[in-house]
Amino acid sequence: MTRKDMFPKGFLWGGATAANQVEGGYLEGGKGLTTVDLMPTGKNRRDILLGNVNSFTPVEGEFYPSHEAIDFYHRYKEDIALFAEMGFKTFRLSISWARIYPNGDDAQPNEAGLQFYDDVFDELLKCGIEPLVTIAHFDVPVNLVEKYGSWKNRKLVELFETYATTLFTRYKNKVKYWMTFNEINMLLHLPFVGAGLAFKEGDNKLEIQYQAAHHQLVASALAVKACHEIIPGAMIGCMLAAGMVYPYTCNPDDVFAAMEKDRSNFFFIDVQSRGEYPGYAKRFFEDNNLSIEMEPGDEEVLRNHPVDYIGFSYYSSRATSTDPEVLKNMTSGNVFGSVSNPYVSKSEWGWTIDPKGFRITANQLYDRYQKPLFVVENGLGAIDEVTPNDEINDDYRIEYLREHITSMGEAIKDGVEILGYTSWGPIDLVSASTGEMKKRYGYVYVDRDNEGNGTLKRIKKKSFDWYKNVIATNGEEL
Ligand code: BGP
Image 1 (spheres, helix red, strand yellow):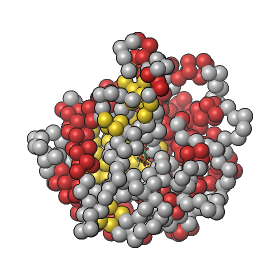
Image 2: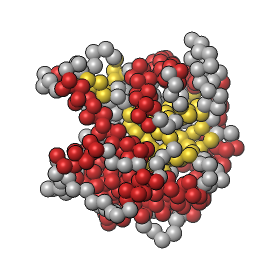
Image 3: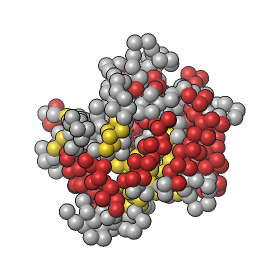
């Protein structure tokens, strides 16, 4: 398929990862334990992600996939060479807070951790790949959870500001594109993942979540401020787990319910981009008797330091209804439960596949914020088979990506400004929701299974050459 001039010159094609899902080396180079290091595979995982955490050290008999992940910590040169071969213009990675501040509240940063990312950035820049850095992608140093209760405590704002400032100062000559919190709305859905929140019996969970949200929002604005002060010309964005919520019918009750669901996600970006709490959020706090502590000066910080661009992930659209019968028929979609939509298909993990929804979502975000967007995650998690000749014929992945990239191109034609596209997991990595390895997103296969067996060998899939050509033709050939 050929598409002429759909993507602007300089469009940033690439791939996206997160420290905890690729690095491994979980206690190497002075790194401290993070929340993700306590998330096992298997039946106990879900409960922990939701914030029911019984142990702040790894438990004997459990398997923790982040501890070794795909060993990017030792193999980053080999992996970056593969990204360079595909022609990546950018590579999205996150920095592990606990590599820089092992306990989160140390007086001095850990030089070995800082040096590791210096080395990674140097390797990327040597290959002509622009780093795109997420400051916090689902990991909080465990010490901060135990000592302060993580993001529910105001103290985290100051500690995060110190951490972010350390990064800007150290990497100011190497990194121009930044993002504060990955999928900031995740803290409402998987609180231990999004904000390191571990609950006790009797806790008012909703209030704690929104208190943590307020702290992250202020911390994010302070990071924007510091970034602009320290790195002139840098761009720093927010990051939303996006995906429009469709009303199941045109019954106004369904339409309103869908709008409310959308707003529960937009809430974060409304604050980060428009710089103030929206009226509907104030009403929500009142209706639910939530009292959120804010300090004098917070409003001003939020107002004065909005983000430069809107980063978002898109995997699926969602749907909702007010009809109890319809609500019985649910499906997943990146932990956002959704009513099953009869007009679209689903992945092997039940995630809705809706390329048109991508165009709709991009338009919706641009209409709302009028700021450049950056698609920083999109992709298909699927089971891959390796043939005896070491081939992986992942046509299903190519098809998913082709349709989504086409839809993104349509959004650009609609007038939406998009800076770039980094598909999720250009190399197979650990799944955030399930901890599995067999849920694969990569153009590059990694020989490792759910139990941690395998040689970690990298093998190019069929999609590798396909994506290489997409980049080489700037999206003209899909
Ligand atoms: C997003 C996260 C990523 C990533 C992706 C795919 O929510 O930002 O970290 O994992 O989803 O999800 P999963 O790994 O559960 O398939």
